[in-house]
Length: 463
Image (tube, rainbow, N blue to C red; front, side, top):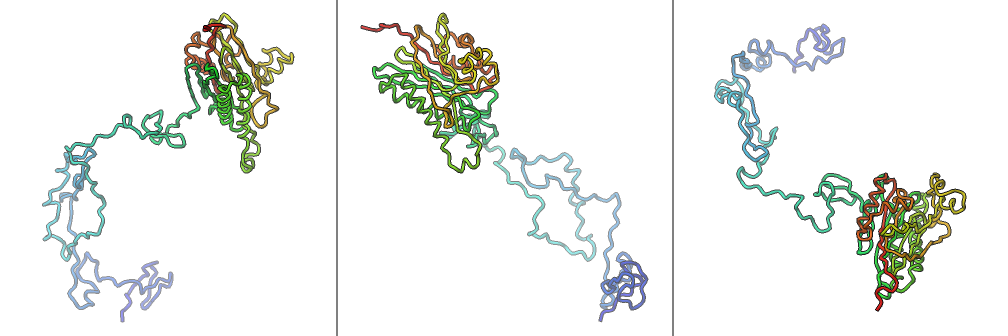
């Protein structure tokens, strides 16, 4: 039976104890949990209670060796002690102070014979993970490295769209570069197209977040084989839902209609009338949304846009329009008058037509550009406007949205803005006119089509 250790005071609270106490009377400490203590300190005499009680020889406590400042310092471990290579694949350079900082092996490691008595040799456990792992070396130094492919010269897969900023990263479906993260310009932010006898340019402008204009240009052969040149320009109504879709649908529908009716022998003015009706049907179809879409956006109105178009065929100039996009006639010689061929469907135009205001007063009013006619499911009764002209000299037809004519409203201003060689360089002229609007502030989307009108005197070319 084991005996309780004899304690004079509680190890927990130092309360004096009496012989035979099992618990401290002050704090309740369990005195039986206190292990027996040796007769002397481990650094004192060599005897111990447990060793003596066992009947064996008293065990010797190892004595710590005295260490002063003259003894060898603790070994220092350096990065070069571990195998590895630098970023170029070569051996790690040896530090200049590695020899002086690293103690000699003979003096750094104590001799096995001088180890403390009773100390056992410890064998390192192979299962213990080291603190650091040597990195695998790349290609051996001196071996030729494979040349890295230059992303600027590498041929991307067919159909891959590259970033306009870094010219190497691919563009993801969201319109951002996978390499540099640069947002890519949308296709409709700036568009240009040129045919032999017509050209058009459209730009987002400097203030709008997207381009809501659209255009279509084309040529067709009349039944007698003579060419017909077509230009259609549409401006999406920003206050309506999806105006960019409305303008695109209208231009495509009108252009397709003309390419069918003109070769069939339909008179150009009648063909333009039918093209406007086809464009209206295409825009109206955009309003046919599922009922669930209306539930989520009950206050959205139907998509809407304006339209203006021109046809040059057989010495005849035909224009058609709905809304406030315009067509101008600009003669090459500038001796004849520059003429605006369309009348706006707008509040200002109504005021002038009714004689209530002059043109300067009407267009100075804040309500001036409120349109009274447009293509869309919520439009008033559709009244396509068409007109035919027979110019007596060569010139160009400028078909544009209000993003241009707001900066060249008067016919004289438009004549000054159109380059003198517009008939010979229609694309350059369209670019110049778009630049004129951007230089003026670019508050709106800008779209311009330039259609040369070659004058052929009556009877010329007859046998």
